[in-house]
Image 1 (cartoon, rainbow over the protein chains, first blue to last red):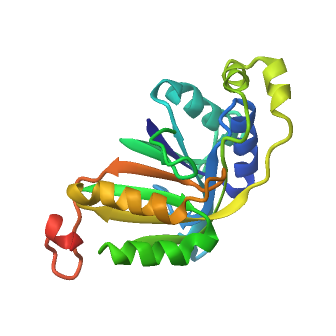
Image 2 (cartoon, each protein chain N blue to C red):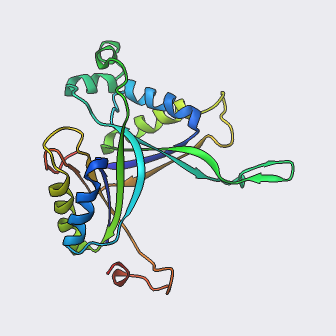
Length: 108
Length: 125
């Protein structure tokens, strides 16, 4: 199993979640986060904004779904044809075990 | 050491805190409110069809389900306390109805106490 954490623009998180839903990846968790990237935030005049609000989407999927799921998130979260700075990042972490609390079983 | 991420109901927070403290796991981090949805009541065939972009399967999924507010608990425990932590979380939160949440266990390589700079398992006690 793999934990996928995608940091996307807040206005794009609805689009990404809809795309994931229509691809059959229904289970997903969203939380608001703030942060900056390689461009050191936004500089407008003399003011630097380095705590830009984003949405963090978190989901755990099977190993074989990785490529498809990442492609779905990437296509939905990109702005314009080529993408733009600030579109976000996707991180993948291996998960050793997953438990469902309502059944008390060790499965996704 | 293991990083445990648990997504639980908000109204089970007090019971979870008490249960964790009772077995000696005092330190954890909670993220105020996270919004999410689960797998829902879908047939495995429908999910498989949607993964393969079959239009009939996508139509069977219906409208997007609403997002529920949950709470996320993150705790780092030593290897030998992993099963204890997972069992405690399951027992404290289980109501036998869908929506109770999930627990994920991830390998954690190191932990460092900022105050002293020491690292290793002794940080977690």
